[in-house]
Length: 637
Image (cartoon, rainbow, N blue to C red; front, side, top):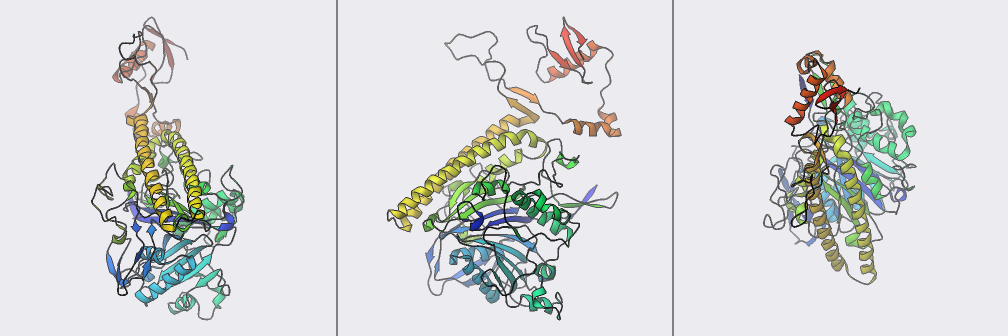
């Protein structure tokens, strides 16, 4: 018997790549929006001019509750997903921080989700977004807890870590750090800013009271020098879960970029044991994924965001050590909660938390390219559901309409909803009500086949399809980029390019949707009912009037391979006294009796061991192999 101790609903992973670390000089931002109760969809905020007294509603992204109204800007930019028409891209992970600083329910209006989408509507650069977020929370109050914001604008990539002041006072404190050129920075539900420079505004910015507020609430000594201030120590002290379930994902990403040896000194920290040996905030890649170029490409980041701690001390697949949680399929995934208590021993245990996870609502890998025309400056490789199993479609920040199968009539918040008739411009679906016209639900269908006992069987087929289809879409987008750049050089204005961008996004996403839905059917057909199906052994008879050959079949009779369980899994069952007694098959008294028993089981499954007198080897319950000769069984092993 077990009991859940902690059951977090949401958690995310972000990766920021500076222009100097990327292969083409773009800034990259990857985001897995992990939440079990979110509906993964593309929201759209059309560009607009607003009257002087216009206002904007604010809704809490986490709870979907109304928070209040704030003045609207005179002009807002087109936003689709997490990117805008000028190449600004934003994401986040929640670190929570001190419970007493949770600003939820304190009367603040600005939640973290609204801060992102409002910044995207009003800003072209990360510098502007940082200023705006600070201004909004100071003026209207903060309504969430600790957040790590990611921002990329084509020239710079920034991490901004912010936490509210709880019931103490209005507003929030924060530190923003620019990712150094040539570096990559990741964060995953644990604040990563420790000490920071206070004399380098080009690369580090912070709220004026980030230190004094900590002193005020007793989180930093009054007599300590300001430059000794540690943001994480004050506002989000590292715990076992912060390291094991948060920063271990960062460790996994970093080791793939700089090598296992470079990250080996931080293994005990990532395990949640040595909490004093913090990892570096960022790394300088020298070894991207195997067989890749020296610098990081979009395709590399797509693969990185599929990471599941493979081939490391944490590897949850049961390949490096026996792991009952992996099941016979060697699945890297675990059902929630992350920690649980054994009621017999009283001990608490933890499941691993991987970058790629089943409860992702949506994921994107975005590139912001300053040299591209504005509507095509940001491209999001976007997908609903698990980053490890999902095909990503290209969505440019200047696209003015969400593709039908990816659209949402309700929206992550009302301002992003597709205000149209259901079934015409958006599927009739949400997080509880499925539809085979919804990309979210179709992508979930594919992903769900890759979990649990069928993981080993599904993985080869899924990876092959995913790699092939993703490579084709990347090539299509490269060709589209060239076309949009040519349009700009030929004098086409942004409105014309935005129209072309939107048509490309709609067409490409629609084709990808139908291809992925068809793939679900193919994958389902190949793995249904506990079998692994292959091409028929017998040839199907040709249609009339062609002559038939004896032995041909009137219908398709696919080869149905019995998958069963692996050797270690069966040994575990056999070693359990009660189960071994319950499931044991008594030894037959003769070879003939053994074969008759095998024959009986085969016929139960509508299969034959002998066809047209052809002798076949058969395997008995004891794994002895027999040959059928003239109706009698002869042991051959």
